[in-house]
Amino acid sequence: MNNEFEHLFSGFSEVSTQEWKDKIIIDLKGADYNKLVTKTDFGSDFQPFYQENDIKSIPFIKNIPAEFPFLRGTEPENNWKIRQEIVVNDIVEANNFAIKLLENGVNSIVFCFNDRHISEVADLTMLLEGIDISKTEISFKNQDNILQLQELFILFTELKSIDITKLKGSFYYNPITKFISEGVFPIGENQKFDNVNILVNLNIERLGNYGAINVDADLFHNAGANTVQEIAFALSQGVEYINKFTNNEPKNIENLTKQLEFTFATGSNYFIEIAKYRAVKLLWAKIIESYGVQEKELQKIRINAITSTWNKTSYDAYVNLLRTTTEAMAATIGGCKSITVIPFDSTFKYPDDFSYRIAKNIQIVLKEESYLNKVVDPAGGSYYIETLTNELINKSWQLFLETENEGGFCKNILNNKIQNLIEESANEKNVKIALGKISILGTNKYPNLLEKINGKIKIETETEITISDYPFKKIKTYRAAEKFEQLRLKTESLSKIPKVFLFNIGNVTMSKARSIFALSFFGCAGFEIIDNDIFKTVDEGLIEITKHKPEIVVICSSDDEYLQLAKEIKPKLNKKIEFVIAGYPKNIVDELKAIGVNNFIHVNSNILETLTNFQNRILE
View 1: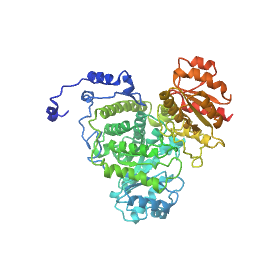
View 2: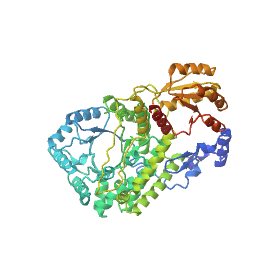
View 3: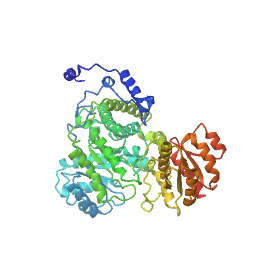
View 4: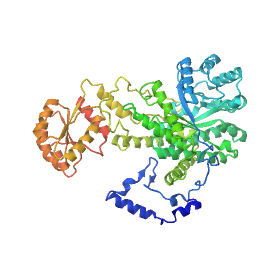
C-alpha cells in the first residue's frame, strides 16, 4: 500500500488472514470452505480472498507500463487494433468486404488464403484496391508460396510509391505450425528455415521491418492445452526460430525479433486469461534480454489475440456472443496489440454481414463505450490477479526450461512429449465436460429444447494422413462441444424422436428440483421432454404414460419415497421402457437394484456416456 494513503485507513485495525477465513466459515453455515477454492487446469489452487501481504514478495509489483520487463504493458497506452480475418475465395468480394469493415471501425485486416492464392501483382492490386496500406494494418496468412507473395508485395509498394517505413502488418509465415498440425514442412526439412532467412532479410531491406513470422500459440489452446502449456510452448517455439535462424548473431537476432509476432487464443476463463497475457510479456522480455538484446523496443512481445474456437458451440450459438465478449475483455485488459473476435456463427456456417458486424461491434463497445483503451493494465495491483500472474510466470518458466533442456521445441515435437502433455490436458478437460464439471451452456447444461440444427451443419469424418518421414502425433484442434453436438445431431436425424416422461410425484420441493435437473440432462441429447405437474397419485401418472408412449420414464421425487414408488410404478410399465431414478439414493440403491432399477442420473453422472447408452439402447 502507498504510504501516502496509509493515514486514510488508520482508524481500522488490521484483519489477519485467519480472521477473514474464520468469518467466511461462519457465513458458510457449515458448508465446506474448500468449495470456494478455485482449482485451475494447470494444477494450482486459488483462495477465495487475498490480502496485501500475499503480494509483498512478488518482484514485479512496482513495475510500470512500457518499462522492462513490460508485464504491465509494452506501451504507455492501451489502444489495441480491431482486427478481422477475411477468407479470400473471391478477390473482388474480399476487397469489397475489407473496405466495408475499414469504414466501420476495423483498422487491421488479415487476408487468409485457404484455397485461392496470390500469384500475380494484378491480383494483389485488385485485393488492395482502395485501401491505403500506409495507414491501415494489412496482413496475409496461409499463402503457400510465401516468397512469391513477398516479391509481389514489394513490387506493389514500388508501383504505388508507398513509404515502406509506414507499413504495418505481417506475412504471418510459420512453417513450424504446418509441421506440427499437418505432419509435414511446406518445404524439405533441410530447407525448412531457409524461407525464414530470406523473408526476414528481404523485409528489412525492402519493406521497412514489415512483419514476417508468427508463432501460432492459439493452436495449443484449441487443442486442449492448459494455460501453462500455452505459454511455455509458445515461448519455446519463438526461441526455436531465434536459435535456428540467427546463429546467435546479434544483428540476426535483432532482425528476427523486429518481425516476430505471437497469436494467442483468448479463452473464457476471464482472470486466468488476463494473467496469461501479463505473464507472457514478462517472460518473453526476459528471454530476449538473455540473448544480449538491450534495445527496449526489441524486448517487447507483440501479441495478437483471437477468440477461442475450443469453447464455441453450434447449438445455442448466441451464447458465443457472451463468450467472445468476455474473451475480448480479457485480451484488452491483458494488453494485447490486436484482437480478432471470431463471428458467433462460424462453427456451423460461413459468417454473414450481421455476425461480422456484431463481432466488430463488441470491440467498438469495449473501446468507445467502456473506455478500456484509456487505462493500461487496469488489473495491476489486484491481489488475486497479481498472485495468479506470478503463479503462471513461475510454472510456465519451469515447463519452458524443461522443454529447452530436452532439446527445444521441434525435438520435443518429434519425440511426442509436447503432444502427450497437451493430449493429457485435453483428456482431463473432456472428462470434466462429459461429467458437467466444465459447463458449456446450451450444450451440456441448460440446452434450448426447441432448437434444431440438423441441415445447418454436418458431422465431419476425419481422414488420417500418415507421413512416413515424420512419425509423430499431429496436434489436432477440436471444439469441446463436438461430442455432445454429434449426439444431439444423431437424435435429430431419427424419424421418431425419443420421448422422456418426467414422473413428478411426492415431495414437491425435491420433485421439482429433480424434474428441472432431468429436463436439462436429457435435453442435452435432443430428446423430447414431457414435463408434468406434480401427480397426486401413481395412477394419474400411469394414465399419462399410456397417452404419450415414452421410451424413458424418469421418477422425480425424494430419496425417502423412491423405493415404494419404484415398487408401484416399474411393474406396470412396458418392459421396453427405460426406467430411471433422478438422483442417487445411496442408502437404498441395493434394494432398488434388487427390483430391477439400474438407471440413475445425478450430479456425478457422466452425461455424455449415459445419454449415448440410452440413445443406443433405444435404437436397438
